[in-house]
Length: 222
Image (cartoon, rainbow, N blue to C red; front, side, top):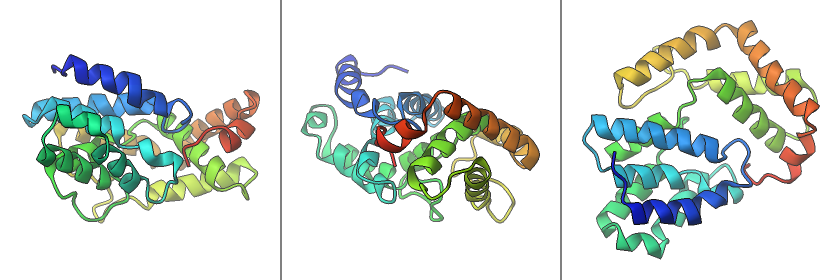
């Protein structure tokens, strides 16, 4: 999908560098969300520039704190005067609301359809990627935990608590590609010993690479 070159240059030069000190929400994650959003935008005939921007900004407020990062990130977007040359006030507000509503733990539907595609695009239906992001977040936010079993059990229960009443991880759009990814992911994730083995590989990598202190003290995503 075509993205305005001037807009793309601004995002890549001014917004992407803000993720340099993020570990579990770094540029790899942001690019994955962008690709998902653009795929969904094409399927549902939505504005690709809006989809690109909201995906690019959706975690930028994490250096302030995790609990309300979706609102902080929305404020960063709506207060960015440079975006006014590319979007109307109405478009900016739609993107702000989408960012505010993107969290996977949210029980109520997002207020607009852009919020639904952003929330669904933020799903990590890849155990290896999820292990990297979850363990880093746990290490950062739970310094009282010192062992792999402690971190893994917390991570696993956190994700299991996201199952809906049908026993599935929620999707707002029910896009067939995402449903297929979810089905494959769930078939592996619900096998707890298998999932634990993947998380253990990531834990061993963190220890071997001496990343514990860096995750705790250098990276800014909480």
